[in-house]
Amino acid sequence: MTQTTSAARSARPIPEGYHTLTAALAIEGAAQAIDFYERVFEATVLGRMLGPDGQTVWHAELRIGDSRLMLSDAMPEMGARGPLALGGSPVTLHVYVEDADAVFQRAVDAGATVVQPLADAFWGDRYGRFRDPFGHEWGVATHIEDVSDEEMNRRAAAFTGSSSS
Image 1 (spheres, rainbow, N blue to C red):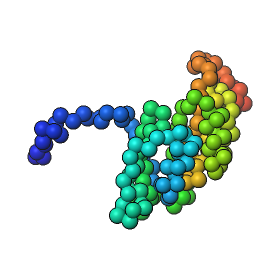
Image 2 (image 1 turned 135 degrees about the vertical axis):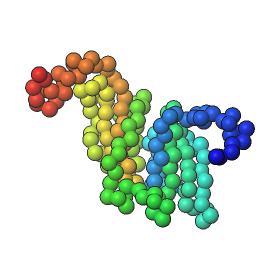
Image 3 (image 1 turned 180 degrees about the vertical axis):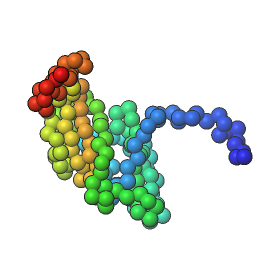
Image 4 (image 1 turned 45 degrees about the horizontal axis):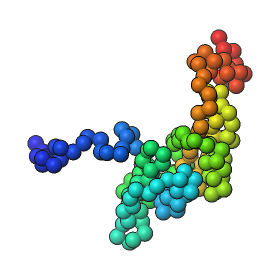
């Protein structure tokens, strides 16, 4: 049986400032990625722990809007491989922002590759996707319209050219 100190028992199960789910990315070039996320998403660096070499990012935390993002340099020897080593990522990080056009343009200006051009989407968001220079994909959206399920189904059918029945 594990013994816990009273300090550990009084700790909050979800620490102050965190949500239930927090993404943690392994990145080839974490320090450069932090700069990119500061520029594109106006991220705030909350902390950064470097390895013994003084350069490798062992752990960093950023705040983007009301959410945290954890990241580190890729460390294959520890099982942390980034998307560049893996040939891409099956994950898209979705971010709601006040002005998708401005964020998307900052991303492209900072070296991102457009995956899906920014457009008004049938579900009511202004939405587009880009791949950052480190291989991670981001969906950026500003909600512009509340759409009923019925209307969304109609629009989706029109978008795909299929029948809505």
